[in-house]
Length: 273
Image (cartoon, helix red, strand yellow):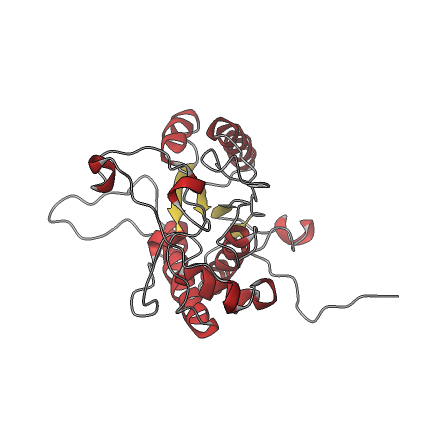
């Protein structure tokens, strides 16, 4: 029995394309989505970060590709830093040192075949790639390294009424749009309430420590999802993808030897297509 699909392979999604296409394409930007496997309130699946990363990367890649930017979207990494959630079953932790080794290997492979620019598309708040990329950029000056947190690229202004930071209205709306069959009925949603730090400096956010998640939250959520809708999720996905794609397009076109503008000079950084 044969299985058919109506959708043709998307050439910007490396997992779907083939050597015949890849061998004749000069890719300008490679994108590695990095997510997590973790609890998301009572009602969202453990794979929420990865589902979102896949959708955002694919749509941003499509927009960029159709604008002429040769973007390669790599498969999402489904495990992230979960060191504050080790007491929650199946919150699979990958330490930052392990992520560093993974990134080093991926970057070396891409650099070796001439890919000039690399982006880590981050979809999990426990991940932080900036310090890793500082070190890796020094090791691999031939490839330009950067990272994007999609949840900071667009915070839902004009779409989301009550944003939080985990399993909130933003993430619940996205999942209601992307995979509604994986979202529990509304009667099972927690309110995403947080428990405040007793330490004043922590509350004022000029001191930082890792949150012990089961103490800091009451249902593993942080932000009330009650106003979430699939329609908001569809609009929010489009807004994020457009913003992220804009970066991919600009990055693909820019000459990395001319990344900075001197005062009083016109922009000459982007190459003419």
